[in-house]
Length: 304
Image 1 (cartoon, rainbow, N blue to C red):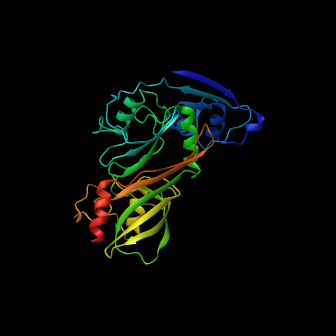
Image 2: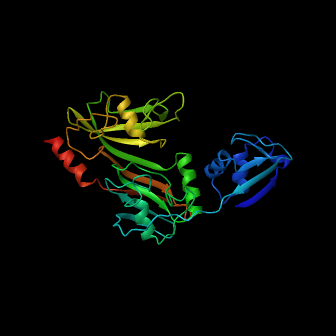
Image 3: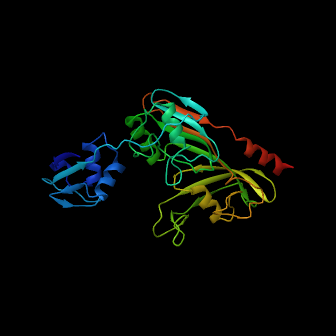
């Protein structure tokens, strides 16, 4: 455990403590500092405060920084479909059925296991011991482009791009039913389902703002092929939003039809386009993950 102490200056008075600490401790992410506040590892004048506490001139802030844990994750030589790689990051095309990071019941065979082996352990540690390198996630049965960071500086920059919604993310999906209009927007705060904690739902009371734009690409009568553009990145966002307007994704047994008439392994959802500004070159880069075989076959079946 490492101890840091700061005295608040006049120019910092009135600012939130998490913002002040993010400026003072640039090697730590704001979200991690907020977690330390929640875990009572940060005190002000020897008293516990919340992340929204506004500091006063002369406040003495004490930060107890836990020792870095060594991930107990085994690197595994699992083939990766790499769309791009350099010294700072890589973009991979995640296959269907692969969990992004280890969790209860999925401690191996994950994308993290694979990239640990590929990058020989050189991944950012900002998101904790179970999610090294992971800036954003997609569901196990969602395929497509995913960004992995090799160092903390790259991770912090891309996490900030994600926070201000400047990372371009476009998904392809097949949903039930036919849309009245060719394009539209779904807005609704997403949070935990009030009665089923394993699901997400539009939750005005406890949810976070979420916006999904959609455009019809092809109509099949009882199903529609669409593109979705995310402004925000909430858990299960596209699945929840499409279900909320009466167009759940094909194969989605959680938010849609459990009968799974098309015999799919999970929802028909693909993260096709990923674009961002490279943290070290300043260049805008965009990558496209080709539609997986199952998705192409599904479209062919619907067209017939």
